[in-house]
Image 1 (cartoon, rainbow, N blue to C red):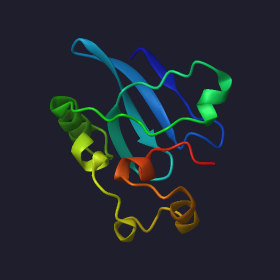
Image 2 (tube, helix red, strand yellow):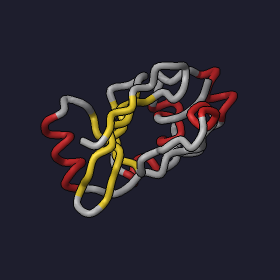
Image 3 (cartoon, rainbow, N blue to C red):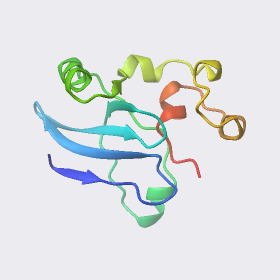
Image 4 (cartoon, rainbow, N blue to C red):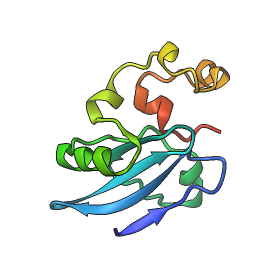
Length: 117
């Protein structure tokens, strides 16, 4: 593990652990609202404001890491293909409808891992 970034404010709605995986750094992100994990490019804020105002994560393919997380973490682990696919609000009743109506997420990743306030 290189670094663990706990989200302590309102945003983002996920924590991230930055790790070295193969020849690159990736972030294992854990949603604060659902029991979901994913693998993304690490988000490194360049200013205090960026922590609160950032766009969607870039999810990455890491099949062996996703399989290991799914087997050993006790969380549901979504792939980049899952997260980059369209968002179906009916399939995710635990996501606040007011947030969906306001932010209008296009992908599942935007709905589950975001910087919404």
